[in-house]
Length: 169
Image (cartoon, rainbow, N blue to C red):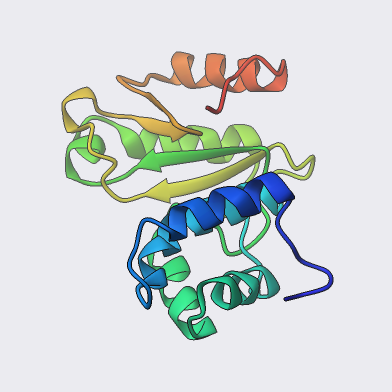
């Protein structure tokens, strides 16, 4: 195993517990939950050495980890801000104003899609369907959905983040 990258003992114990759910030779089945643990533990994103470490733990090829990590939007391939604003931009959200919400966030935070504010606080990440079509437009912040968004609601969310009063779950 890597000398520089290693899970904390409690995280490693959790990884082994997840791996034990699957039959011998099927460790790859644990990849998604292990990647979530890795992203949380190693700064909110998955660097190549971190993905290589996960591959080694699961006894799979690094490319198998890269394929999964780059496919799913919940994994970050570069450093992100403390608060990742994932704004849905598919049909129902677009019809209900998500582009207006995205434009407001871009202007207010002075960032483009995929960028992080200079203070490292916010990253804007347009997302494909987040499954809350009946409550559009919406954004995901951590594990929580913020639905029926308006410019005023977005400003309130940003202010609460700046004050450190937002729970990411």
